[in-house]
Length: 167
Image (cartoon, rainbow, N blue to C red; front, top):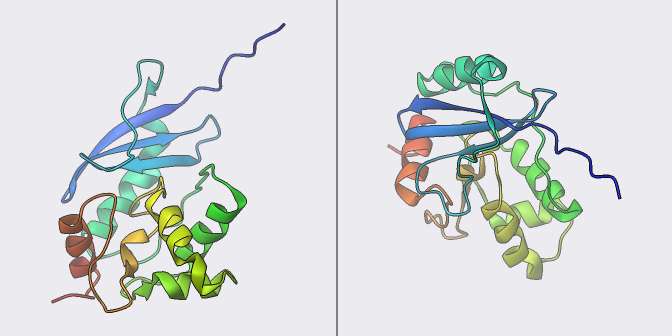
């Protein structure tokens, strides 16, 4: 049986107002994850990853501009792996504009899922491996409450404040 080596995972750290970010990318340079310290389900640096800030220059520039309030939409190649359902949910997240919020139920409706699928939608949003870049922080409870964010509610509030949603 022939084994094929796994494709390399590239990584880097970036300092940001919400903590030290860990970014990963594949061999093609597409971002595969953005994690924050203490993130529920976030990625953890692995020994076999290649530390190289080179593939992340555009991401570093765009994230700096975002945190400075000068960028409202990321233009970066993203490649997250997940089920077809998760991919549909994540694509719906990509459509939520800067400075806006949606509810879990609205995301379910956007992907054509029944109201009963709101829990599954929440699970897919919670599994989003590309925090900030894929704006799961813009999803709020049906009553307007700040609910669930893998990066922590304090970070969610900071991001929504930066985007002008919260005072």
